[in-house]
Length: 421
Image 1 (cartoon, rainbow, N blue to C red):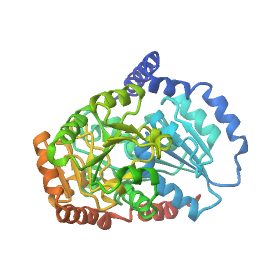
Image 2: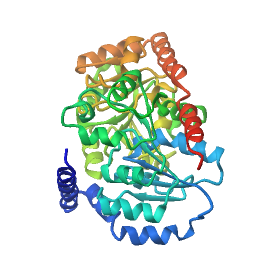
Image 3: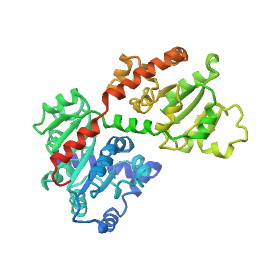
Image 4: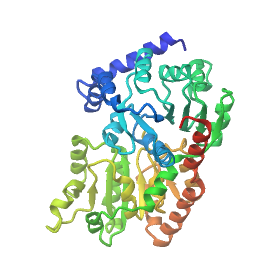
């Protein structure tokens, strides 16, 4: 792809976001967060200590941040004097983590143009940079390479269908040469990337495993959630979409599961979605935000605790006997690792083939794939037997035990390869 064509495509994309801001709250945040960007950046960086190293980490959104988080925190622990500049592409990452205390500066990433890349690096002057998983921006990467700033890609996954491995993927292959080292999650990615670049590639694993294991070791109590659960078996439904909620509604109505309670955390918590879920379940819902207000007042027959905020789902899986992971009837399942870190068996939809952990869980009976309502009820009937649920949970946790350590591999290599941090 020629640079002019890349500029045309990305320019059109960024323009479409600005147009979408007229009616989309998320797009509006994207645009507003970049207003007067470089003026704000220059003001913020007046407090920079030029005698200390500065690490720039860029993440697309919240999920990628969670993959980079353990690396940031380990580097901070190993090098307490390091300064950290954290950027996000999406509001769903920035708005949730804009007060993350480990980073010294947290900003959006400006649209990818040659002038923006030059301006950002002139102001920030990082001594090292890290991009997480899928973030490939040509002008930022090529400018980092031109300035000989050590740049790393971590937690990366590659598929044969990606542009890097197609006849038209010359620019994408060129971007791979901008990385000092590439850390991939699986053997397939290692083999694919090594076939198209001479730059060092290392199989490190998935840093998310270290993160979820860390969360599970330090459980948050949530006494009001515990009170809601009582002695009932709990199905935690994480990152659900309307297609998932149709199945869950079928489960709620099934006579054989009336003793179960449900903690439901939709992927989208905008007001319209929350209200739609409340209508769907016909008053059988209590919002998480109402828990404290209604504590001790008798919450009636509510069986569904609706999580209407972001950031606590990973800590709520500790209450589950079984977890349902959403997204499998759409573009792909969400995070199964957060649940299995608590030895909880997981259920998910058919679109899971690109997730190595889901395939492993299916093979080892720690996770179960379903196609429809009947299969959901059949699996829940099996997991309703306590010994079956415990056995599947033990199998699920084996994946966590076998795959920890990616953070240590990545940070060790980063510290060895960059003499500046």
